[in-house]
Structure formats: C-alpha cells, structure tokens
Length: 129
Image 1 (tube, rainbow, N blue to C red):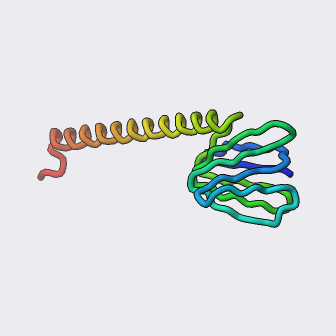
Image 2 (cartoon, rainbow, N blue to C red):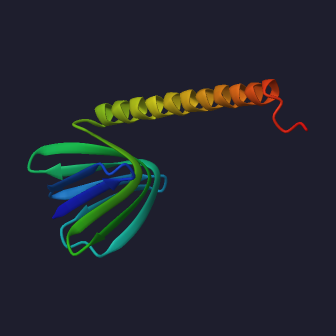
C-alpha cells in the first residue's frame, strides 16, 4: 500500500509500506493492506510506517488520516519524520520551539514598531488642529 503525508507548510512524504500503526489519544490502530476504509483524527500522536524490515515514524499534530483503496493519506498541521520515534519526536519538538521563538520575535518586533509609531505621531502632533 502507499501513503502520502502533507503538512500545512507543504512538506510531503510519499512511499510504499506494508502496514501502518497509528497512535493517537484513543490508543493504537494497525492498518494492513485491504483494511476497510477509515478516517481518524489525531490531535497529537505518531504514525509508525513499516516496509520490508524498516520502520519510520512521523510525529504529527492536528492531523486527519484517511485510508481507502490501499492508500493512506495524512493531512496535518505539523509533521516530522525520523528513523526512530525518539528522533522524530526530537525533530518535532525542535521545530515547535523554533516556531515559538520566531513568533515571540515577531510579536516583539511588532510591539517595537507600534511604540515607534505612537512616538512619531506624538512628536509630529498629528491629529491636532
């Protein structure tokens, strides 16, 4: 069977697998070839992809997983892949930390610009007749 994963940022993964194990807040579910069609939601969790004798993991956040016609589709807000669950989770946590720091920096920059705008309006006596 084939899986496709797509994130909000456009990151994609595609490969052929033998089976998948999905871990979400409700527990674990394995999907093998010819499984009945299913749609799952994953707030936070991971997906173990097994092919031949290799395993790969995708840690996901806010995802929807659909399986039909032997194709697994994963749509998620955030996702990171790794050869082990620990590597995938570590990469995921690092990416989340970087995004949080960037958001904080953007908020600080916005506050600074807003202060400068107020000061310039006051200095220029804009709005006064």
